[in-house]
Image: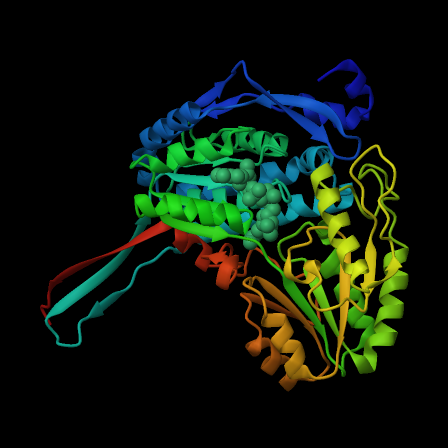
Length: 493
Ligand code: NAD
C-alpha cells in the first residue's frame, strides 16, 4: 500500500488492512513475489496488494487439502461442530474489522457490511448445528431379503470459487457446510475482493481449523487456476458462485472427470405487484429487493411488473423513495448506496439505461453517471420500459429499477417466466390464495411474498433453469458436500 493511498483511508480502515495476511494459505501461510492490487471502488485507488497465485499454487493447495482430508474426515461430528462454533464466535467478535474490509474493497455502506458479517456468521452457526445431524437411514427391502443402512460421508477435497458481491457470506456459505461434512477445501475468492477472504482464513486457523483443511489462493488467473485444479482427479467437488457464462464453462470442465458440481449462478428476478397489493408494503419490499447491496445481488429484483390499477400510486411512491437515496463512500454514515464494483460495471449499467431510454422508458429518478472519483451510479427508476429493452433480459447488477405495467395476472406470469434464469421472484398481493397460486406458477427456486429480503442460513438458497444446480443453506446445503453410500446385508428378520 502506498503512503498516499493509505492517507485516503481512515485510521480504522488502515488498521483493518494491516491485520490481513496477504500471502497464500497453502498448509500454512506463504509469501509469493507476484502481487495482485486491490482497489477501493469508492475512490478508484489501490489500497493493498496480496499474493497473485498461479495454477501451480492451486495444485499445491490441493496437495495440502488431500493430505489433510483423511484426518479431518476422521474427526467426530461434535469436534467439527465445536470448531465451527469457535469460528462463529470469532467472526462475530471481528464484526467491525470484517465489515471495514468489506466496505473498503467492495464498497457497500458500512451498515450493510455489518449485516453481511452477521448473515455470513449465521451460516457458520447453522452448519455447526447441522454437522451433528447428518444421519443416514435404515430399511428392509420390500421383498424382505435385505436390511440396508445408508451413510453420508464427506465427498472429499473441494474447490470453492466465490464472487465479489458478498466477499464474506458467499465464502462462509460454502466453507461452513464443507467443513461440517468433513471435507477439506481450496477456496479461490474473487480477485476484486481478496482481503475479506484472507482475514476470514486467519480466523479459521485461530478457531482451530487444522492447517491444510482450508487453503486459500488469491489469483488474477482464475481460468487456468480452476482448469488445472479441476483436471486433477484428486479433486472431488467444485462449488461455484458467480455468473452463468463462467458456470457453464466450469460445468464443461467438470464433465471431463464427472466432478460433483454445485452452481449458484446469475438471476433475473421478476417482482410482481398485483392489483390487490398493499402499495406501501410493495414499495418497501421493492426498495429492499432492488437496492440491497446496491442491486449487485443475484436475487436483486431485476424487473418490476406492476398492475395498471396500482401502477400510478406505486410508481409515484417508489420513485420518491428512491430519489432520496444518497450515494457516496460507504464509510460515510449518510451514505445509503455505495459505488459499483468497478468502471466496467458503471459502463454496463449506463449502457442498459441508455438502451431502455432510447426505446421510450421515462427516467423518474437517477439515470446520470456522476463525475468521479469512484465508480458510482445513482439509484434509478425507469417507468414505461418497453418490451425488448435489454435490461429486461440481462442481469443489471446495479441500482436500476425498470417498471413495466400490465393488465392481466396471466400476462405478468408469462413475462416473469420468459427468461433462461430462475433464481428468485417476488410477489405482492393481499390475497393469500392468489399468492400461493402465483408463487407456484413462477419458475424460480425462491419466491418472496410481500417481502423483499428472503435469504437466511436456514433456507435452501438456489435456482432453477440456468440459475444453477444444488442448494446452499438449510438442512439441504450440507448434502452437496456428502456422498451417499448404502450397505446391504441379508435380512435376519
Ligand atoms: P464471475 O463469474 O465473473 O466471477 C465469479 C468467480 O469466478 C470469481 O472468483 C472469478 O475470479 C471466477 N472466475 C472468473 N472467470 C473464471 C473462469 N474462466 N474460470 C474459473 N473461475 C473464474 O462473477 P462475479 O462478477 O464475481 O459475480 C457476479 C455474478 O455472480 C452475478 O451473475 C451474480 O448473479 C452471481 N451470483 C450468484 C449467486 C447465487 O447464489 N446464485 C450469489 C452471488 C452472485
